[in-house]
Every structure is written in structure tokens, then in C-alpha cells.
Length: 147
Image 1 (cartoon, rainbow, N blue to C red):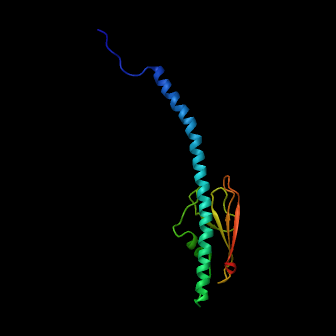
Image 2: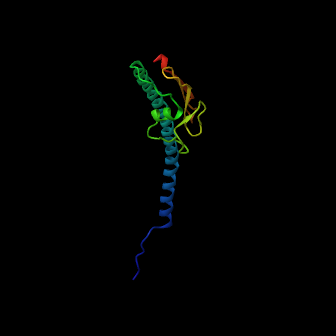
Image 3: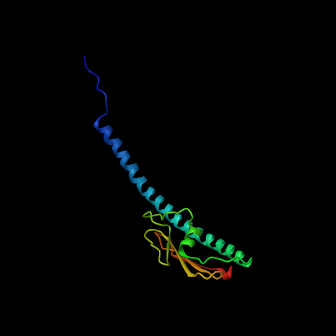
């Protein structure tokens, strides 16, 4: 009496490995592209959020000054608290999403915040988006006296 063998033949296993290799060859570049798009989107979102937040804060400070309130002087730390109250991270490296200065790291996707003038009522702030990955570098100057 002959015993029945169970299991897969070598050919069947090689076909399965070949199919997995083909699927991986297609999926890995698509996944890398997806990750790059997500990182660029995060940098753009951080930049747009900074511009909106700073404009809103300066408008609020102008209203407070018009009421006769005494305004505190802006510093980088108070500026960062307005723009990034949750302590967001940059898309690469896990560093701070917002850094002091007009030359943020294009490698990490940080957004630069530069306080040109901190005089209450006439603050001037420059927000800089780096040329991260395929993004174009961009700067926005927000002047409290022109809001």
C-alpha cells in the first residue's frame, strides 16, 4: 500500500515566491510615493496653519489694543505657542515643526518663524516654508499694521 504524500511541490512554492516578489516590486514604489506625498502635505498644512494662526492672533491683538489693553511683547516662544499649541513634529526626524528663523531645514520639513518686529501693534512676522522634497520654497510676511 502506497502512502499519500501531503505538502507542496518545489514548483508550487517557487510560483508563490515569484508572485509575492512581483507584488512587492509593484507595492514598494507606490508606498514610497504615498509617504512622500503625505510628508509634503504635512509641510504645506503646517505652513498654511501658521499663516492663518498668526493673522488671527495679530487681529485679536489689534482689537485688544483698540480697547486700551496693554499688550505683551511677542517673542518666539509666544509665537510658537500661538501657531503650534499641540507641539507638532516635523515630517522627517521628529524635531519641532516650527523653528526660529528664515532658513528652516529643507531636509526635515520645518517651518521657519521669524519675528522681524515685536513692537506691540506693529508686529512683523515672516513665515517660511522650505523647498522640501518637491515643494517650492515660499515666504509670507504678515504685518500687523496692514491687517
